[in-house]
Length: 117
Image (cartoon, rainbow, N blue to C red; front, side):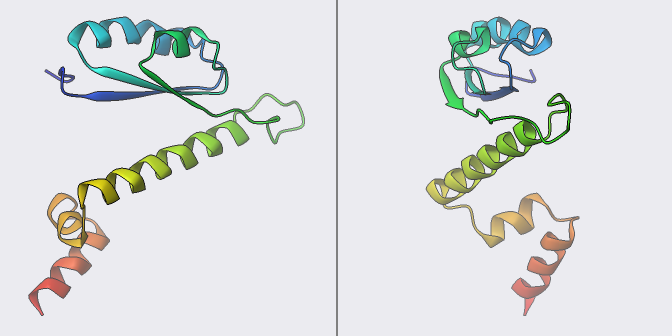
């Protein structure tokens, strides 16, 4: 199975009405997994169907037409980074874990070299 009852799925949609995202929430919850929504619309379909909502609204997008998802994607990325750092801290994730789970990347290689010294 790709998603199990032990999983938490983070669903991201600025409007909270993106059909392909909203449509996935019910099957995910039927499996027993939890859904956290990151959305700019806390009253949206996505927010209402999720277990938790992380508000992520922006005053507007950076492009002159206020259409291209620029500021909204940057804000969602920042929330995702904050979640990752919080989970790393709570879970005690350290340099050894980076080396173990990302051995092929430059960070993992550098950490493995440091560990052998």
